[in-house]
Length: 163
Image (tube, rainbow, N blue to C red):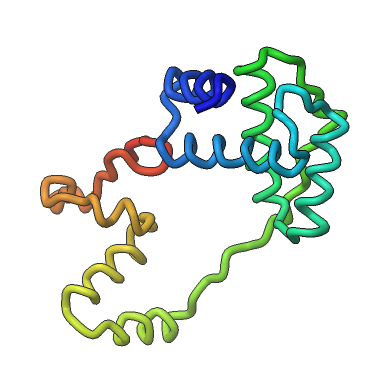
């Protein structure tokens, strides 16, 4: 493990980032350095702009994906290397805001009837009724369901937040 990687890993862990975010940020900085075949501490804003352009043009990534790459690089430069970061030099891409697809009653019924077992049907109904994420649903316990108040408590959801 290189000195820079170790420093970044410690910074991420001290700030209590999730394991998945840590892996993604480390992998992003590795990819950035590999792209230029140079240690990342020797690269600057010009390289970041060039890398951002490559992510859009060659890899055809979405604005949201490129924003996550930039967040990882920004963390590395600002927190680990303690360098200034200018959003005017490396702007975050605009995301296209789309309205969610809303299913009709018939489509919801068709989805629920497609379940092969009663257990699958209950899972689908709970997902649809609560708006919970799949990973949040898999961590539900019986005690998280308050049938008196008709409330489901999601513990440790996205961002380790309860809701």
